[in-house]
Length: 321
Ligand SMILES: [Zn+2]
Ligand SMILES: [Zn+2]
Image 1: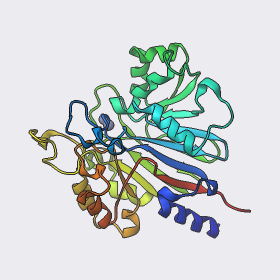
Image 2 (image 1 turned 135 degrees about the vertical axis):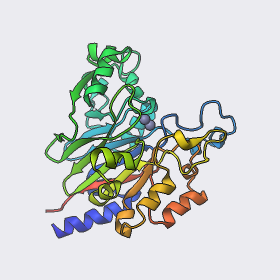
Image 3 (image 1 turned 60 degrees about the vertical axis):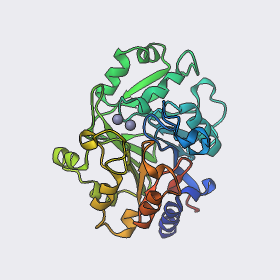
Image 4 (image 1 turned 120 degrees about the vertical axis):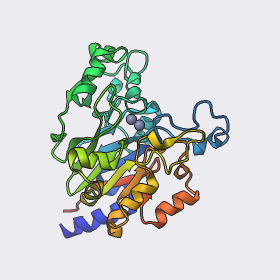
């Protein structure tokens, strides 16, 4: 057991370099951008037009359980094609699963474009998938069932919606369980949740979108500092780095905790807890999208981390008998 815990902390510390053959249950960062990705539509000055290595896809996590040959994704981004290819490269699907893509479940956070529209690639014009389990909260479920083109995915049985309830844990298999946690966010079409992802001795928290840490604490009594303390890795909303980031727009009415403010808020945490934070879902204007920016360095110097596509975090190392 001690050996297992040592291996666990080693692989968590290693993050992106965790070796797959030593890991039973692993999280893979498939995309780390805000919904619209980068380069941004209409912005011909975005450096990613010239250098595609600077481009961003919308935020999505993959979850691999090698013990069962199972693969899950959290949020279906518009770039789900690229995301599934990246997942295939890290954890090849278990045998030929044909049209079902080797996806054993898709967990959705909410109905904003970066988080669910990738489902369209499961339909008739694309994969023609069969009964892919899509885990959704009640309003999200109704939104998919009642609105075209998503309703067609349901009637053609491309997807099979599995209802989730707030704060209720769904056991996926004997190792992994998932719990949706409601958060305040612009909720026109669906509620919004973050997810606890529990596997063996480690747990990850995934929260790409929230209006503010204060309103979450006021509404639900949950403090982000406690969440980080209780997680082994916490992927949290980093849409904007600071006010003034959107040229020609007053940002005072625009929600999302700023990265700079989040770091201040978490400043009193011990270094070991700060190191669990992975900022994710960054807008094309957020300077942390560039690895070498002073802002990325600032995040690292303060002891936090930025999630990058391709990062890997082991939640359950293989324990040798
Ligand atoms: Zn978003
Ligand atoms: Zn959103």
